[in-house]
Image 1: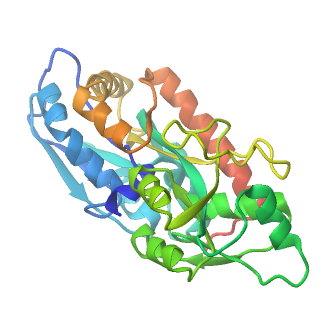
Image 2: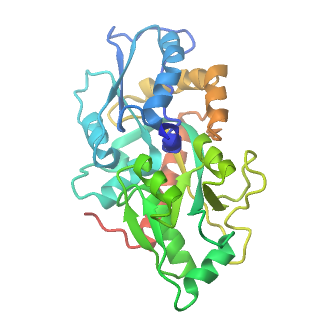
Length: 324
């Protein structure tokens, strides 16, 4: 199940120009992953680490600093000493959402520059196999019918991207669902398979495809405008009459504090594009039913991050997300 969070991942690629010049300080590049060891972001960095070291001509050291929905690692990197060679690897939506949902997350998305977005994975709405509804319209009819028991929907914590997707879905269909928070997908997925919860939004990573093909869970629909080629028979949530323009995904990338000079950001951006194009990494992305974002240059990356922040803030406002 560890790869399921990949959605919350394809997070890494870094650094240096095609000339393979070593960092002037001679220090290793520290990649501070804001999620646990063995999780999707961490796994992605370790997959791409050899290519990054080759591009850099210097060691790349991966460190994990999880906690507070990714906010602990973000705050650590934002406040790191200027002479430290530290970058942040994390999920873009969670970096944006944490200050809106976690009272102790003392930073804003504007504290960071996006070096490069790296990969994206659509969310898919799954149900326990015990239920009879097979698509979004049947699900909406069920939850709106008087007398039917309230359905539960899992998420991986208040303000997480899975929570936002579920809350937005609930608001858009005009029906109440019971939110059940988990510490991660590793504990949520078995409860969905076992029927202890009824529904969940999960990133459409490779293991989810396996669960669906085994019949252990059912697909209600993909939160996207287009079907996924790995699951051509699974409709999007927009193909019924209940929802339109409903899209939620997770993307990951490499970030630096805003104080990092533009020239350094450009250097890291060029190297990230080089690492992103390695056949081994592209194969890893495909095997996880995800897509590479970009490569984007620094101006495109900045615009992308600004647009994503505006979009996530609008959704958070629409569901009245409150910091806890």
